[in-house]
Image 1 (cartoon, rainbow, N blue to C red):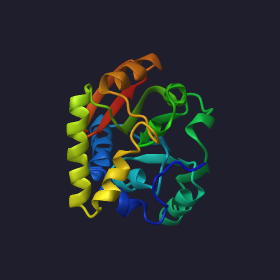
Image 2 (cartoon, helix red, strand yellow):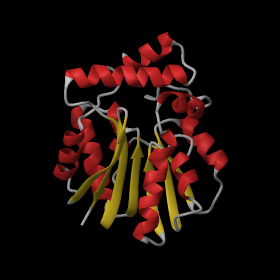
Image 3 (tube, rainbow, N blue to C red):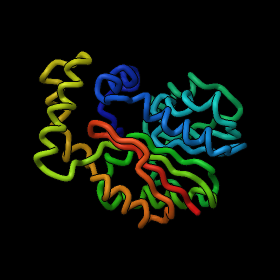
Image 4 (cartoon, rainbow, N blue to C red):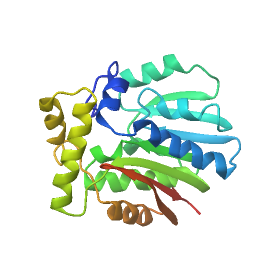
Length: 221
């Protein structure tokens, strides 16, 4: 089953119209890794889409191996066509099928886990933690839930306004808002941080937030 709201062909253009500061998600991850000084990085990207994470990092991070994974064969085909390299591998799979133990220096999941149920989300984060070596870093960016209903309505209007300014008609923007809590299931920032700690990450931080999206980092010590 493919959970993305867009087809592979229109994915990149549509997501820019939908998510404010979309490029910043990937910049934040790359910048943190740049200053960390990690070398010969083994990297697993969950829900790779058309390969935006690798595109952002490939000339800035010393990557030894980059594993693209996605449940969508169409997405993987586009990513594989875009990036031909001996260090790149492509696997069609769900994060829930991940069985690797202490194999990677970096695991990323950008706009992926909010499609999962509460139980499956916990399992997904736990599997990401298990897949990391000691000292490995997990990054995830997700849609988030505000702490109050008043804030949620205000943030909905702001997010909807962004989408309309960037080319969607009002009906399209409102349709996207209606997917909240039905097609995807956001958590509050506090719930994200708590979940990551419960799943085995010792150092957990909010690294970025705007509109109704946030980025989190967890380090496995």
